Length: 199
Image (cartoon, rainbow, N blue to C red; front, side):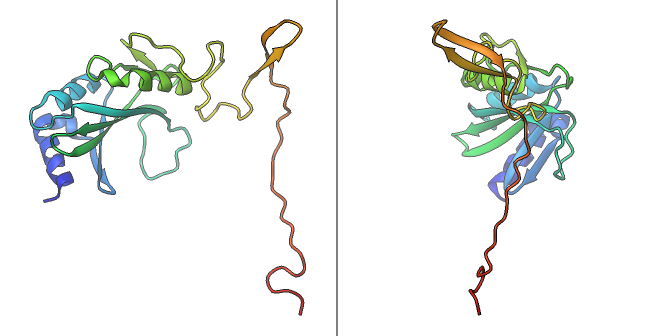
């Protein structure tokens, strides 16, 4: 039995029905849980003496709108956490979907793994996912006055506003984007001698 198979068995044993969303692909395990069970499952993953996922090493937001893979998402926005058990040398991906696509809200994992704080701020900033119970949920990569969430698939490539420095006013000013949207199609140029020269 491989380490991944052993972990899958343990997760089913410990979590019971909460592990019904467990999948294995390319030697990695992903556990999908509902937003209602998210905190409970996270605590069990950390505190259970056999599982022992003492470290959260990453959390990222995902926008599944227009997703074309074989996986069928249950919503548009998800938070995906990557957990590590150093003692057992195994990893687990924990995925949860927000219930409302228009206003995605999930519970914060900050009380379970404090290392998640900046990752949740990043998912909020770039995807607009709110993390209920987060002690300091504010933008982390974009400016405080930034409008929108730039990693959402419906966010325009050129954005809405641009920031420039105005020498006369001596400060940064915001103005609507002045770049006209255009299609950028590469042009292919082939010379007659392409592929073998002239005969």
